[in-house]
Image 1 (tube, one colour):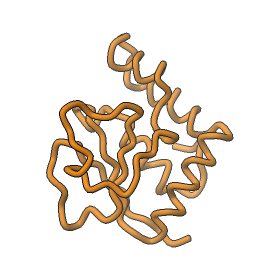
Image 2 (image 1 turned 30 degrees about the vertical axis):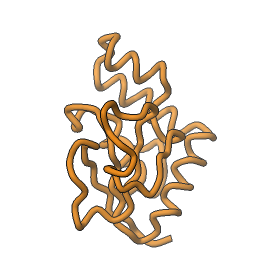
Image 3 (image 1 turned 180 degrees about the vertical axis):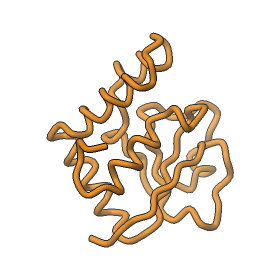
Image 4 (image 1 turned 135 degrees about the horizontal axis):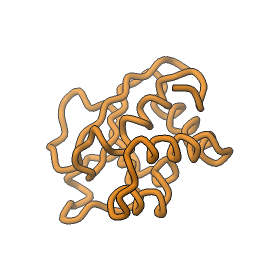
Length: 125
């Protein structure tokens, strides 16, 4: 498996020439966005945070640092590792653009997932 370059973008931004493989990594479909407008390679709900964790972050006041810790634990569980490995394999040696509707993107699941995808092993900062 070759190294991949991972970047994040919001679903509301237009596709860019350097996006490579575009994958929606939200559990819910973004409001007001037509499927054709995203130019998706995939919608990967399996690497998205659980519904409970997403809700705790966006509606329950969960501190972002605690969200990161819990989300990394989800990604390090067997199902999470399998989903991350599958996504990493699909993007073998390519640019991978993770799409989210979350704003700001810096406090979303995207930076956490990007780090997990680009490091050799999961569960390490």
